[in-house]
Figure 1 (cartoon, rainbow, N blue to C red):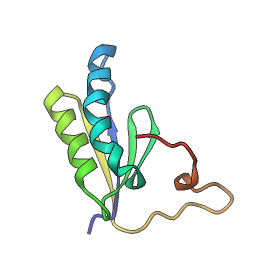
Figure 2: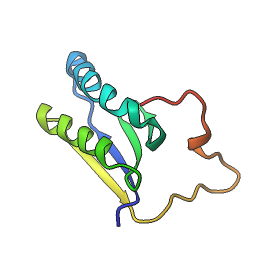
Figure 3: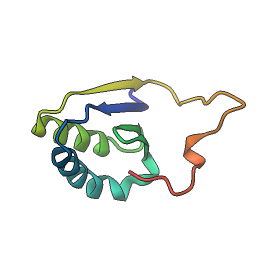
Figure 4: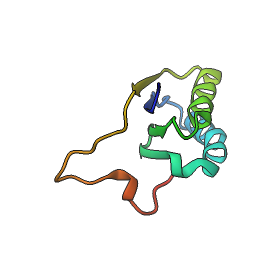
Length: 95
């Protein structure tokens, strides 16, 4: 069973295309922020066990715009190495 997934999308050269992608995706993901961690500009870590919807919206928007993307699935719970930090505890994280 898919437990978590890392979603990475290639950023296009045209800034307006990227802005359009984010404008389409962000409102859909906003209600699910407890299940989504945006790690960098084009990388999201998703708790797909709690909800697969955010992953679906990311895929659909990437497909509709012709952006290449990759998905790294995780079957088990993520285990953050000791001595580091758990990204889920970062305050003010955004989609």
